[in-house]
Length: 95
Image 1 (cartoon, helix red, strand yellow):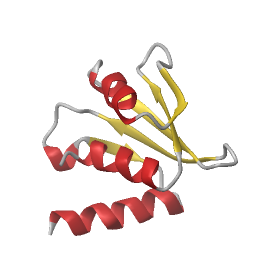
Image 2 (spheres, rainbow, N blue to C red; image 1 turned 45 degrees about the horizontal axis):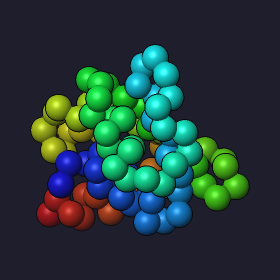
Image 3 (cartoon, helix red, strand yellow; image 1 turned 45 degrees about the vertical axis):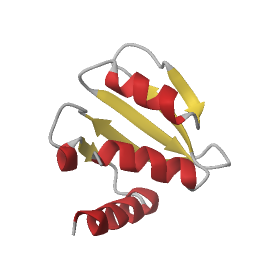
């Protein structure tokens, strides 16, 4: 599974909402709709994903380049407890 899809699934499964910035606009704003989020990410070469908890506090950010190799699609991300926990979980899926 591509890393960005794993990230989106993990965020939704843990009750987080996602906003997608496609470089010009925000086609998805604080949603949990997997297909809409993936469609927005894949509609551009590079997208930014912002992840929010239930209190609408931003807990993570990632730069997504969906055309890269599966484990490289999350090109950059913030070092926050949420993103670090996702990274640890994601790394286990690669072993």
